[in-house]
Length: 94
Image (cartoon, rainbow, N blue to C red; front, side, top):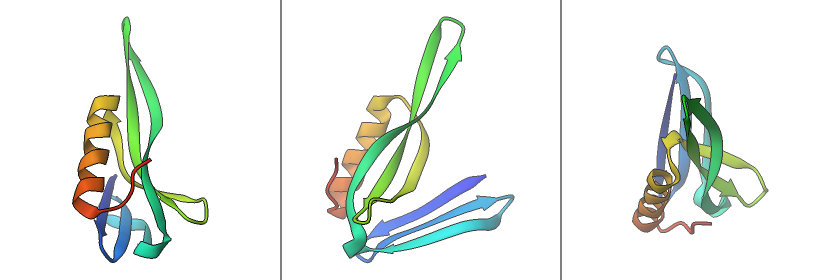
């Protein structure tokens, strides 16, 4: 299971693959991307601790969202990736 994304001035392309075969893909033009945002994916509990995992999504102007990165361990890691993506691509972040 893998997720491959490309984000740039022309927009976003995301491919979800399983065993190397494309299961689903989505292409979004730049003008349809409202902002980049974080969303909680899940929390894993181990012993006495827990880790929350996040995903980075492109929020679209029609209210939908497309995942660009997932299973990011911890808010600090996720926020750093979000800042890096927003800075290097010019898209707004929420």
